[in-house]
Length: 193
Image 1 (cartoon, rainbow, N blue to C red):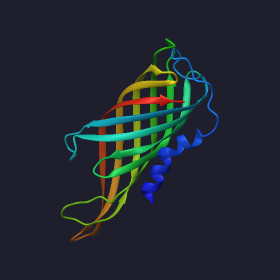
Image 2 (cartoon, rainbow, N blue to C red):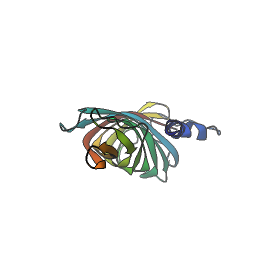
Image 3 (cartoon, helix red, strand yellow):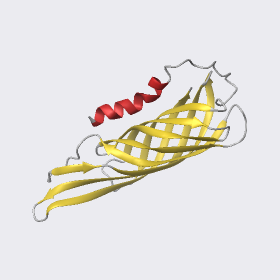
């Protein structure tokens, strides 16, 4: 069920765009000044030597509504592959900096909760229940033109994720453990619509 929900959240913007499309923007404009914007990206969370994985892959889609030239607000969804796969769902804010119409810098951030898509597995203990946890993301990015209304962007930032799980213990019966990830986030993606 969780996998189907994650797939639906990822496909949501394409289902929403079944309506009539506006005329394409010329390549010299960064985005339409108002309306729906989609940011689709692949990323790597790199860092912490204390974790099992030195690098974690991420696939995210941000569904934003641009209120004016400078502010867009929306929802972020996707899949992150830590020790288990999780689906982040949260609020997203982007602030576009004034400047050249062809190239745009932005500051963005998101906060929310990640839902586990599978159960945690440990070698010596049985995991009874896997819970998600909150995430916080902050980034600085650069958007540049590609083809018509499609733009490419690069982003660098910070990503925090916490996950918790309940495992069976020999003496205490059940113990809840929390795992925290503090990572540098590197993303490359495209903006659509």
